[in-house]
Image (cartoon, rainbow, N blue to C red; front, side):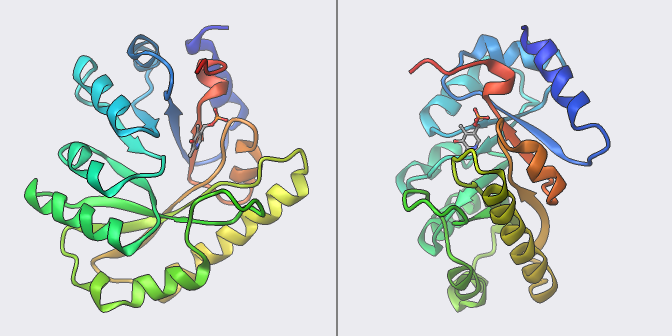
Length: 223
Ligand SMILES: *Cc1c(COP(=O)(O)O)cnc(C)c1O
């Protein structure tokens, strides 16, 4: 199967839903990104700063780059000039660093807060309590160059579709709750980034607005 036909088949599968498809190109070459671009894809996700920044140079400038992986504070400066959306914000300290670098670049950077929804211990993310604490904090309110536009989460990596669905429901409920509680120039809950190759259909049924799909577009990653 070609990247072009994989993209078409994904769009066909999820026909009827309103969402942004983010093509996760990590561990795939820039030539694959270009192939997807030529098929009409514009949103791409990477989980490593260096890989994203390297690809950026050789690729069309109207690509929207999404940072979806765990982000270290000392790497924020490399993506701050161009990143479209950071999905993986999981601390106030990281947000403060993003704000600092956004300010240096005279821009506002849109961010999603990553929420821990999986039952597995290993996944990154904030708890619902921590999100409230963060959004209510004085330190957060002082940040002028970031905007929180939604939440991101990863469900458990399991065959148990009921568990996955429950986790997405949890995230959607939190999203709706925050949306009605917090509204300012800095918080506008619009995007819910959930669903990957294996669970995108369930995620969309549960209210996702952004699915992050790698394998189903580019094939298996070779590390
Ligand atoms: C790799 C990755 C994806 C895509 O996973 P696939 O199963 O290949 O679709 C989505 N989200 C995040 C955060 C990832 O790291």
